[in-house]
Length: 183
Image (cartoon, rainbow, N blue to C red; front, side, top):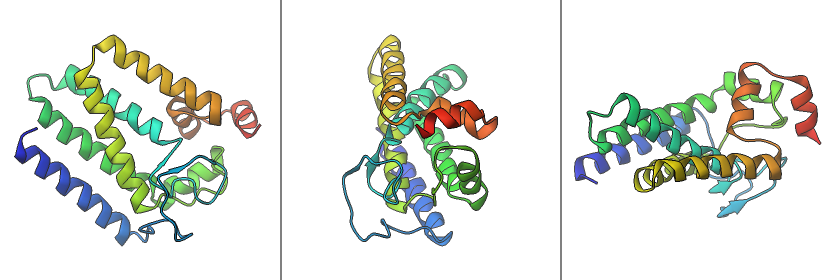
């Protein structure tokens, strides 16, 4: 990757982290521990550690951003498309941790006690998106689709949630889905 793109992406990630800190987000889990993985969705440490089940959704973001960039920004080099994707992902991380979206998650999704992400988790989510973008750039389109569907089905099977359900429930909540997700 060109040095200029790497620098821009690094600046975007740092700025997003600083904005999140300014918004009052905790740098790390309020529990005081930093863990590589946290797999219990209905717990205070979810979205606080480096990776969790929702990391899959951010990997999927990268696959989708790559496809969108290939369709609509094809005349630009992939590095520029990755910069745009990183801006979009960073903007989502900031929006996702705003009181409006936190409240919406609590009101209509299975994230009953959701209090937002730690900055560590948000930065990790941005890096997961970059990984998804990178994978999509390196593998054939059909394999990107297989990876995307596999991530969605794995999350659905294990935690009864995924990017698709997240979007549906945020935009137009379905009571039956919420009941099913709650187990």
